[in-house]
Image (cartoon, rainbow, N blue to C red; front, side, top):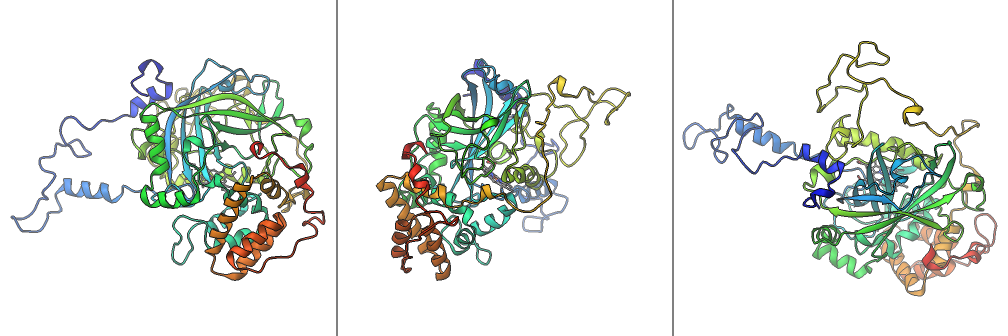
Length: 538
Ligand code: HEM
């Protein structure tokens, strides 16, 4: 990493300015006063009380008292690494994003992998979704691809996210279980909210116990847009494919490792990079021209609970990411990094996916609290390498001394900030999507199929994968204490696959359900399974 001076990125050079090595010179207070003794408080006599005037004691204790910041409300436990991304060939026909158009450019990145449910100190290997968040420090500003290691999400609308996370997190009375989805409130929520069925079956699969962060896929989940210089929009889904392949633990290993080495995934990533075995991913796109938006029966591209199967839209590889440097300081980098799906550069834009839309608000909002005020973009790990100039000012923890008198726009007083704005100067122009509709609180019928893709997933599994999934449902639902939640969960599973439901029911001592005749649309429930994908393409 850092020793390869010639390859040091713009981000590395920027971080240099923030690097602080207190290992030499004198011990001082925060005010730069040299300290004579840091082991003995100032007291009256050898055995007397401490004196309030001991500014070193006061400062040292005060600073210690305030070392903690709130952990992330989800994805609290994570591991980060620096690296770079390079596009294979220009995607100019799809996007005006420079970093996707110039194959000679290595864009610095910082990636944070995470679990979702557990707290900051929880183990690495519980059954859980893994976060895969990438910050690209591009010449046009930061682009954050804030994804997961599974291509779908539990809910279709971000307004349900607080409910979902409350149900997933440890239970309110006793804050148990610390890291697991094997408890009543999780299964209560998902069995009452059938749109979760598809993601839940992924969660019960071996995808939820990755062997290594280096061996995980990543997905942007939502459909995004690329927009080219002519203003043409193309729908895309982002896919990361690990060079080492996708590998999982088995459940027995995952449980034992959680006890023996709770830092298992964290250590693996750190040691691989430390010993020069730099992990790599290939970025791929599912590219969907706007004319094809409605070409996919049973799949609304704005529904985060659905995949677009790869036999319908193959993944086109577009570039490569290498992680080649460990953080120097966990807090300053991995903990203080602030990802936001709303951080996009010209040439990348949003769709109307209601999950994505809620996320656009949530990340920025939560970071105001988590990082103590509005200036968190100035933190070394968050600063773009692109120049920043605007009239935002002041606030807690402002790091810069603003120059000039003009802190408003328009102005003729000069200084402070250039007034150049507008699309012609590379300004971000939102895709002018044409919209017309009533204000309503309801979802289109195209979001209505909650079981079809869960069935598709199940049908795509090999026998041993199915055995693991059955065992996972048995283990997780077996921990549920309220029989009515277990019965309701089995009834939901029966709409995914009857044999699966029976196998789970038998395993947890619930009476097996009858075979359903039709699915929730009155269609035969095996209809989707006829279009089953081979298991390695899903
Ligand atoms: C954090 C992914 C849905 C709110 C994260 C992180 C990831 C992630 C990877 C960790 C970021 C980090 O390492 O710092 C996703 C994915 C989603 C999803 C892939 C669905 C497709 C949502 C929704 C909301 C939300 C719907 C809210 C409406 C948050 C919040 C954090 C977070 C508040 C903590 C951020 C921080 O404190 O820095 N999410 N998330 N997420 N997510 Fe999501």
